[in-house]
Image (cartoon, rainbow, N blue to C red; front, top):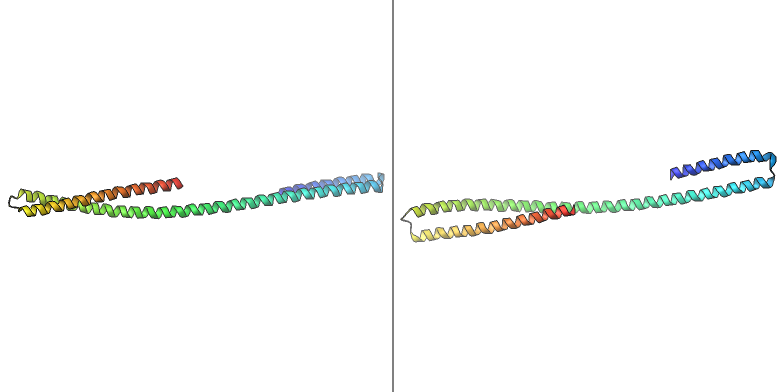
Length: 173
């Protein structure tokens, strides 16, 4: 806007200089009618320059308003994406926490299974173990094996969900 304004101001200065030069030259040679004609030309040219300046200022104002609207829209989109990323991060953190809990349970169950298997091995080596004790121990092992299998499946499910969450997070970025 300022550059165009300065340009128009420069053009107006040139026109004034030209007018003064013509006026000085024509003062001795021209009549009142010629001077009036030059003044009319000057006024017309100044009006045209003002109109051009006004149009340029209006165009620049419209461009600025459009730019500001677009900037506001981009800021809103960025805020929306940041909010979505935060939500996904919370879900990811929860998934990690749940995964850690499941892994801890799995480790405990495996430890218990190891102990029970050791007890079973000891009891199998001992010929004097009653059939009912053997049967009870076997049931505990089966129960723990089922628990381990359930925990493994749960762990696999959490890993799959975690991968999906990551994939969704990367796709949205």
